[in-house]
Amino acid sequence: MSFVVSTLLSQETIADRVRALGEQIRTDYEGKNMLLVCVLKGSFVFAADLARAIDLPMKIDFLGTRSYGDGTESSGVVQITHDLSRPIEDVHVLLVEDIVDSGLTIAHLLKLLRTRNPASLKVCSLLHKPSRAKIEVPIDYLGFTIEDRFVIGYGLDHAEQYRNLPYIGVLTA
Ligand code: IMP
Image (cartoon, rainbow, N blue to C red; front, side):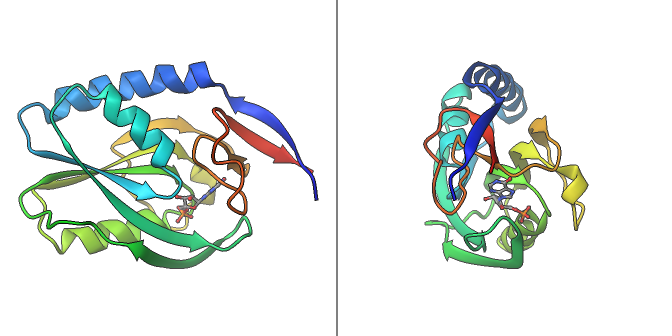
């Protein structure tokens, strides 16, 4: 099936918001030993831009998760495909997500990482689809709230395609 992609959030709109989030995070994390955790795969583009918008020393690590098959509905089962490379005890951890949809992935990751005793644990998500929430999760830093549309681009995929689109779009059949 071939799809048409229409723009939901342009490159400029995203860049402006990422700059503002970076500034807010810089103020909050000044003087703290900060670890930015990029939740793979979807947040690799956002995390790369966000990290460069935060003018502070930081470490960066990666956490791989998989909750969707090739479809557009969460399987509800969150698999860790790649764990953090180091302990996070006494570290100020900021989890960077592409999108909070059902909330199941972030809820699972928060529960898992809390057992490792970080100094603090917060969430930054580029997108939020509140209408799809199955579980309430705290989002400390949020880029955009969007309606219930399946979005692609800027790291987000449909069946592993479209991650390299520089903007966020919606697919229409
Ligand atoms: P959740 O566990 O349902 O909150 O979904 C988390 C993950 O599902 C996200 O990190 C994305 O990788 C993926 N996801 C959710 N909604 C979308 C979407 O609209 N487009 C692409 N991926 C999505």
